Image 1 (cartoon, each protein chain N blue to C red):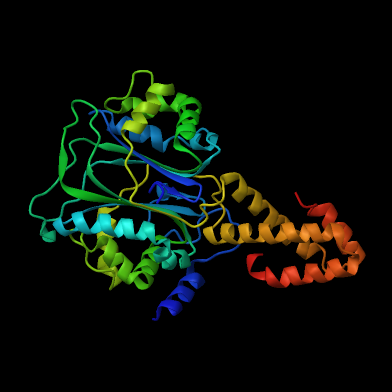
Image 2: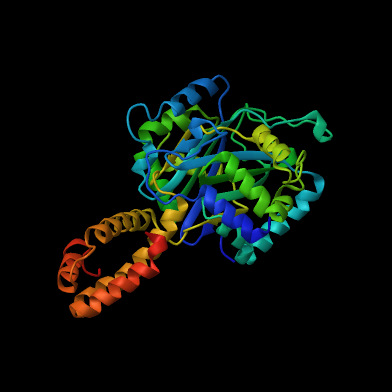
Amino acid sequence: MGSPNVAGQAYAFMAMTPIKPGEECPLAEYLRGLRAHGPSPLARLARTHIGRFVIVPDFHNDPTWKQRREEHLDLNYLIFTSNFDGALDSYLDELCERLAPEASEIWGRCVGCPESARGAALKAYLKHNQIKTGIFFTAYGHATVGEVKQALREREGMIAFAVASQGLEPEALQKAFLAEIGIAR
Amino acid sequence: MTRSEGVAYVHRIVSVQTTSSGPITATGTHPRNNDGQVIAITVFSTIKLQGRVFLPVLFAVTRRFPKLTGTLRQLSFIHFARWCVIGKLPYNGPPQKKGRFRYPHMYFESNFNGGWEEYIDAFSHILTSGMTAFWGSSYGFPKPLPTAPFKRYIQANETETDHYYCAYPDATSTMIQRALELDERLAALKRDAERLDPDAFAAAYRAFLTDMQKAL
């Protein structure tokens, strides 16, 4: 049986890091403003299918739930999860290099993060705070981000071709298909 | 509603095949949980004593027999989902407190398309026993049906994302699965286009369109 973090070629990474007291609001503001100046920084990690940052202030306690004692988080925590292609080590190498400008603003606000929130030190910090997955479900875990994007482009092209080529004679149809859809890779 | 009727119902309400610039019916969730068509859900729940033993076994069995997630696969609007049980967090020094939680906590996240309400409805109606297996040992879990108390439970335990990203935000999970299937079949048609005469190719092309109608 393989790693519970892996399904197909996809990997489920999760790190949960404690936020320094007083840094909760600035971190939330920073994360929520990440799109204000352009695409998400996670777009620079081409192997990322879907990723998220979540600040968890506390666990929910409800007196009607018959939980004998309430439980609270000691600090606010930052969760980072990513569903990405391939192996963890090389992905974290890419993350620690390409997200270096943002990393100090994000994990730099967390307890125990190395002063220089980049490179090998940041990678070790993220790995130290990794939470193992119990079950990882993927609908298309065999396909990489590149393959998904390519298939979506092919589908769009094929739809356009199917509409435009209606009524063409066999010879013209074949010519148009080879010109517009292409030959086998 | 039988399980197959339920699946058909959910496909009708959730599955959308055309590219669009935004979510279709992101009802019941915060805009920060959206990126295009894709919606994030993040839920923590507190586990009772029996879950400490039962959940690791359930996880191990589900991993060993992936076919058990077949019904989940039928809900073709899910991209990625995960469950984790957290009994203790890695220690990073003060002011973080060291030690185990009093109760283990289950983390659940899903990335799906459609609407939040419809997603929970689908989970409750189709994965009724699966939901009970996963959340039955969590404090406050009200059973998947009826859906109203269950939705209140999820809402109470849900945390909004602060930043959410999808590499292909305009695509639904169904579109992607069908596009990947189409891509495979198209490769064969491309080979045919190079080697067949025009009449044979036209016949192969028509057969392809008929077979792949659903994927287009």
